[in-house]
Image 1: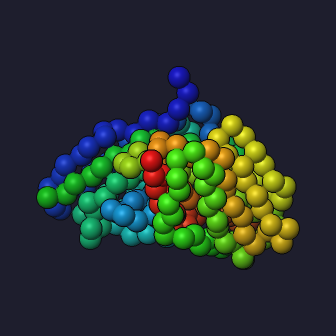
Image 2: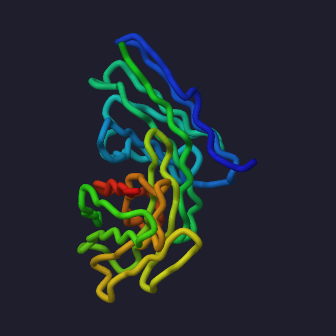
Length: 114
Length: 113
């Protein structure tokens, strides 16, 4: 089946450790996105990428890093510099055809840092 | 960047039409309006999008005002499963390339039995 997959669904880490969240898509989409969602709030953009080996910061990039070595994959690393890493993380992808294409979302990874 | 504003919450009776408004007064001519919904703890689901004309699909209808500064998502016969947070999004472009999606505040639609 075509789609976008995030793993794991739940992740627990100790404070001070880096952690990498996986996002894979087989939709042949050029663009991929990472969002963060806190309880009762909307989605905030962390990073996005339009092409392999290129990415741009979103509104809340501090404390996060990404890579885009393959078109299908856009992993997000939550570093120890992120002050409040506990959140729900969502990955999305879309085609790039001038604006009239919808984004597809994964089911999210819930990260808890203790 | 064009931003969107939506009411925080709305109620709707089951079987009735749900009309969800969105303001996007700074939208530019080549930016599309998208609607998504998110059921608790799941990824957002695409509903519909449009540029200038009204649009309809199997899920909903989208009405965009002539000046494009606001739009309304219509769920014609709301069911309990339509209870979700609905996001109105404007597709932002930079340098001629389509890229980031900026989410608004979202409206929590509660469908009442």
